[in-house]
Structures are given as structure tokens and as C-alpha cells.
Length: 168
Image (cartoon, rainbow, N blue to C red; front, top):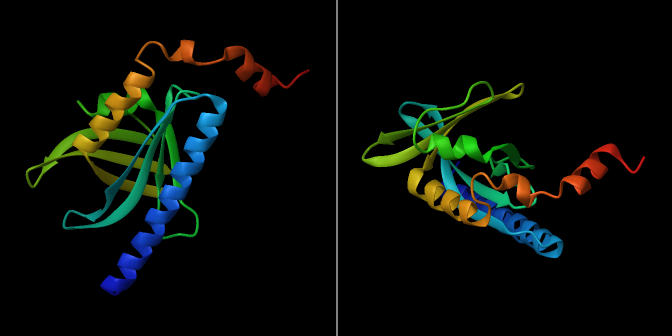
């Protein structure tokens, strides 16, 4: 693929991320919830010598205080979204953690601090590298919105149960 084509596709993905970010923020504002989002470029590791840049969006909202949402734009018509525990990402900044579908650990490569995310699903597996400083700064912002240990207070449990069980 020519460099101009890659740049045009990256611009399209960036525009999609911004639209997604604006829609998410608008929904949160209408619902009275605080959200923290961060655009970044992660690298999809293909081999020890080769990786591809992937536009991504980190999103956290107080209405879902235990979860982080990560959306990857891999060049497909629809983005790939993952949701996992914020606590897992916080721990992964400092040490290897996670089992099964999501594993996270810090590393250094070429003098850069990185966060590695190994994601596994029935559709396939991916190893992604993200800049540690960007992820850590974003996580600090999420912890200001809902500090660790106060997540349950940020939830409206009655509303959640009603939505889950229906208005029987």
C-alpha cells in the first residue's frame, strides 16, 4: 500500500475516532456522567521485527466505573472494541497481570516504556504495544473521576438491577 493511501486511511480512522469520542461524550453529558477519553496510536506486533500502527481510543465513564473501553481501528469497516477491568490496566502499568483473554504487562523497547496488551478471542489473538506514559496519564485522570475503592458508590445499583431484571 502506498504511503499516501496509508495516510488517507489513517486520517479516516482518526476522523472516526473523533466522531466516536464526541458521541460518547455527548451521551455521558446528557446522563450526567463524567468520561475520560484518550486517542493514541498503538502498535500491532506482527513479529519481533515488524509492527503496524493502529489508531485507538481509550474511554472510561463513571456510569461503568469498573471498566475501560478500548476501540481499535484496524482497517476494517467496523472498529474492534474491547472492554475489561480498569483495575487490570492499572496493575498492568506496574507488573504483568491477567490470565485468559486479556494479559497486560510493562516493558521497555528501544529506550521507550511500553504497555503490552495480549488480547485473545475466538476470532484471533493480538499483541499490542501502547506508550506507557500516555496510558498512565489517562489512567490517573480516570482515578480522579472515580478513585479506586469508590466504584460501587458511583453506580446506581437500583437502576442497574432494574435494567437487568426488567420492570417485572
